[in-house]
Image (cartoon, rainbow, N blue to C red; front, top):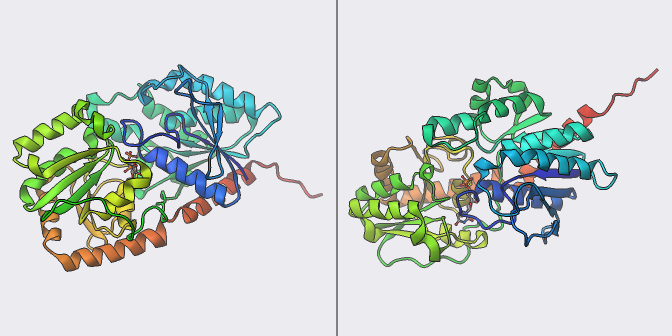
Length: 405
Ligand code: UDP
């Protein structure tokens, strides 16, 4: 099948860990890889954000990345990209309608991509599948006036929900949120993200560890809602352990990052500065070393549409202490593959981490069950197969039915 993926701000080729580069980039890269491996013809359309980028790049994984000229060819924060979605759509419509390569289905990632895909799809007859990755209602609830999303985001997301051919939600929590927004449940299919089971394995190289200290690892973009400040506060209750934070700008530039500076100041104020280490961005292919070096992976976001890092930790056989939010409630089974605690509660987090670090048997049992669960339920092959069924269904639904005389 010819599949277009639209991912306006999140290129599958981007370096991860920066403010706007995280799970969506990984998701799109892995999904495109798995679909290409299954024999599909996949093109990923992302905004051209550097003059150095060629129009199109063929990846070693067998899919193509097309850099769409829309807006200035330089990095632009994702919250200011909305005005460029119409030129993005015009470009897609022109290419898809030119008689050359045209997709049978377009899968949009994030709401702005959805607008572009829908606009181009309407002009060219291409059906659209939408994955939100994050929802404006949730962001506004947690960030209040600090939410820099464009005005109208929630209305756009609702309008997309009733206009696209199919919504692919990634968790039960996302379904609940969408229903509360007024999007009918019948328009949604739940397909969770996958995890790369070749990159994330229990056996392999391990990052260096400090002598005599257990390791609590936490991973993600250095933004407030990832809850690293709660993890640092929790470390007061966890003696003999270091907290390693992976993500943010590259190691050399981490001291210039304002959130990194806040985290360091907090660690000093909590008296744990000597046990908190900010590693900075780690290339995707080296992430497994860091997960494998951990006794526990902590994922303590305030909210989380899906949350790849707990799943990556699980696939490396690492028990997870997670905040009971979003997709983490689906991936981490409380008391079986890890422990869930309320979000933004450093005391509960500290207690859970300490308890698990002092209980070797429980850690072993969680790790074994976590690995099983990641392998059984969350392979990209399985996810890509489920999505291919969705694509086939929306394409078939668009085909005119033949009237048999
Ligand atoms: N990641 C990475 N290097 C880093 C930090 C993060 O490769 O230095 C990857 C991480 O392995 C995961 C993704 O970025 O695949 C983060 O995804 P998640 O869903 O946890 O968070 P998001 O960024 O989507 O909010």
